[in-house]
Image (cartoon, rainbow, N blue to C red):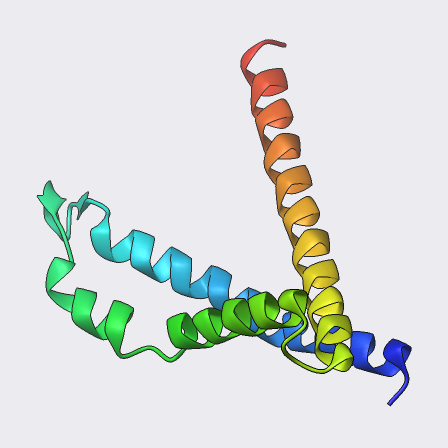
Amino acid sequence: MPPVAVTALGFLTGVVLIPLLLRWLLLARTVFGSHGNDFLGPARRRLVWTAPVVLLLQPLPYLVLAVIAIAGLALRGRLPFAWLWLMIGFGLYAVLMGALILSRLVGRKRKARRAAHP
């Protein structure tokens, strides 16, 4: 397979795994954060009792560990060269998604600052 095709495959793998990772991280944040309003009561309630389900039974953390292991083996040269191109495509998508998220966060902070100080 040509390196461009393998890189595209890694990019598509990132398209699937990175949003799932972000969703899992938000779910973990929800589990360990304080919850409270009129319906839930005081803000001291937590959903920690769901932590084993969220953290251990979800397949995504194990997939992330596998991606990290594959990246490490590919960088050391213990896997065929195509795996390195696959990880480059995956990394490109991760960087693109990270830049997009950071730009949205910076934009929201600027918008909030402008609204606070007209």
